[in-house]
Length: 214
Image 1: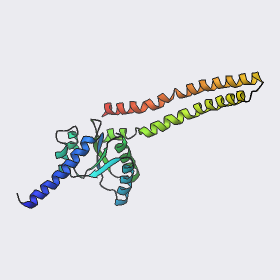
Image 2: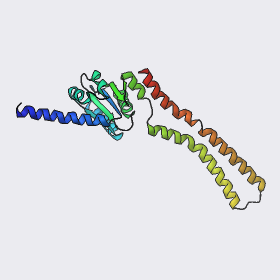
Image 3: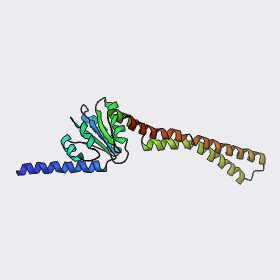
Image 4: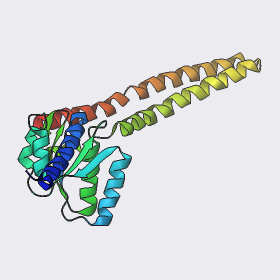
């Protein structure tokens, strides 16, 4: 083996080790056929992925096959044909599928090949289903938005009563009315907060259903 061959082999091994390290840390990894997008579109997509802490890299299929051999990601070998890009997330498991799907819709190009999310393999249709699940931030924002209004109503009513008592108002009937109003507001807040669970839970159910469908 001459020096040039040794150098090429060593260089390939460096890339293989890099891929291994990424997949070992990954919570989800999506394989994408990126053919057709322009440089400008690719830059825009990379920016969106980077902002979501998603690693997006193009690797040679042969090197990836060697890196994932014997690992939980070995099933991806089935889709490693033709040009392949890899979107990997170490935190938000649905982010790669969701953001790549957004790019596919916007550019009318590219396609999913397959992916592994938390140890489960998904084909193209399965990844499209996963892409519909909101991010953790979206779920939290939805929850907070749902409870903000009823809780705020109750707080304002209690504050009004406290203010009236602090002023030493003599109209006991008026105070009683405000107290009744506060109690009613508190009950309404409770009733409005409870249904929020019904809005958040479907996201979990969609994820489970996606696993069963694939």
